[in-house]
Length: 468
Image 1 (cartoon, rainbow, N blue to C red):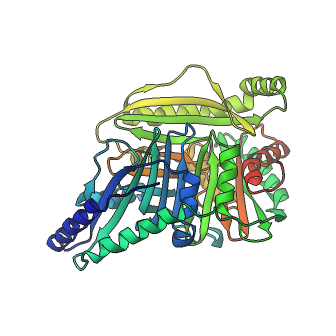
Image 2 (tube, rainbow, N blue to C red):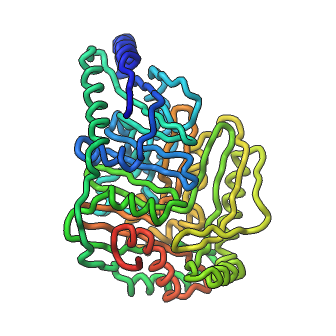
Image 3 (tube, one colour):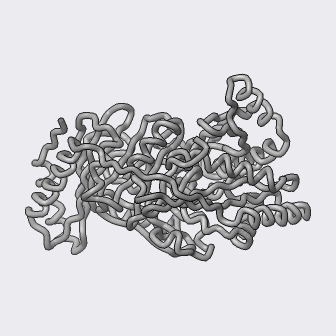
């Protein structure tokens, strides 16, 4: 049973209304309470009726941090391409600057935070596929459940205006009770089946890979990452809760995320951290080069050894390591990384992997480093600007949020972003899945095509498709 104290929220709302009158602008009131444990998927499902289209879900690979939001207290969004990371950060700072925050706990991931992300390339012509997502889109949730290192918290965020009164507190309390009542209900379930999978122009994609390989031999580009889409059609609307449950079972060692916007949902299980900030410490990951998992331990070990010795994948990984190391050195006083490349194994794929840590220079924000790192050579290419221009020119796909930074920032400036790969966009009874691969001068179009088929597998399996 979950018990929520009501008194402090009422007091906070009254203070916020008075402050809104004095400042002649809306004021945030945020309250954090420690509560009994709730199953994260149950909490997400409890928002299905009252907050459908306004939910998000986040879990880190170590199961140390779960953050789930229901409802939208405030939305930060923009389609402006220039300075987009800076503009989001400024709007966030301005929103929380005069807020009344009642948080007696000194942990990251509780209190007011914004969750969302950025499109891969805001200069790419937008298509109907991503019409529900702005190029920069973040939600500050009205109600949020967090699990931080085994402790459970409930955050309430409300915006008060000078015209509000205590009836606002009563309305909020009623909404909270609705959520906790729904926790006891049966999980929402519907049966749906995959009717058809339509790979979008695979032969044309292979031709594009071949053309880019020829361009790479001219030495102006070292690497270009090319992505493609497959479209799935189901018998009826896809149940997000079921997809998340499947990702939980099959991809537990990944960042698992879902981000709803206006009826659509971007969802996935990414093995790749872009960057995490905790106090003055930054943590990031070099992840590039991949191969399938083996059916036996011996086959798996041999495949891993093959990957560690493969020249094409080693070069790809080195590009990422070099770029991320340079970016970290710009914003950190010290940078630490292992000398030897490691393997990161997920259920379907194993990757070349190098972790990097650093101590941030003064006033270096999380979004500043997100801006500096995106896109890494693992998702864009090298040199970065020329590679992105080439992707913009030749790639049929509108990537939207695929391959881009997705994550959260709290009111103390801490947070974490993943690179949103192994992902898909769910739209009612249809879904688009996305996968890409690094094209270098000795790439083979058919091999790269097979690699993308492997990378579709995690989401295809979670949605109930083939390759299970």
